[in-house]
Length: 259
Image 1 (cartoon, rainbow, N blue to C red):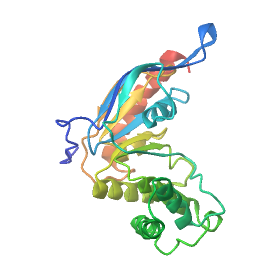
Image 2: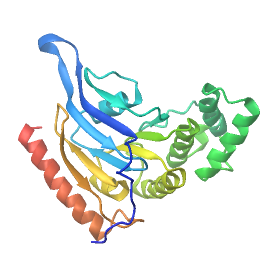
Image 3: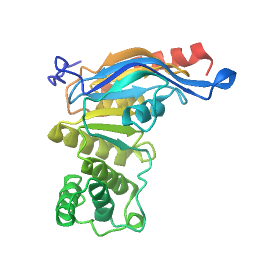
Image 4: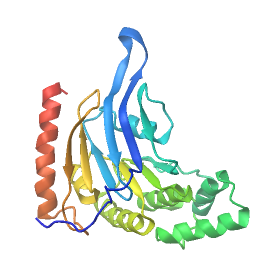
């Protein structure tokens, strides 16, 4: 097993600091505790994958970090960084072209019209869709629509990118190609990433670290550093070995909670 030379700069201040975050929905006896005292720090340029059983609060955690939801207890600090959020579904506006969908994110930031067009073209080129700016979503494949969604997320000029199972609905080959694209973009733009997935091998393929949450309520039960050279292949022996270890721990946790 090779040791990676990548250094996510853990000696610097974290890009994301989650401190004792709990999130409950409802009040009294009927309250549902989704997260319970979750603490996690993510270093600049680090790619952290979050794993756990369905309903363990992974998506809730991303919503709290994005500022879309408030924690019941605890704090989240992104140090003034610009945060972008990407969901499993591309959620593109069907009446807009690919370029128009990217431009919309720029428009909300107050970018002038001429600059929006130039930046949208650059971002589509960055995800290898430079020739597809005039196409509408229904004219694009699933993988292409996800690339547009990545470009739109980047249009927010994000320092921190939150990704909620963005490739879960794609076929294996398309997902593998987008893994390569995402890794390249993160390296070029020095992005910090929090990536939620159910796919253990995907987590090992992409992450510098894999964080395992317990079944509801979500708590951090274990962290796995991924000390493997890049680029990685999802079907490589080293990836499979570590993924197997994490899967065993995940099964243990799920079984312990009877989920």
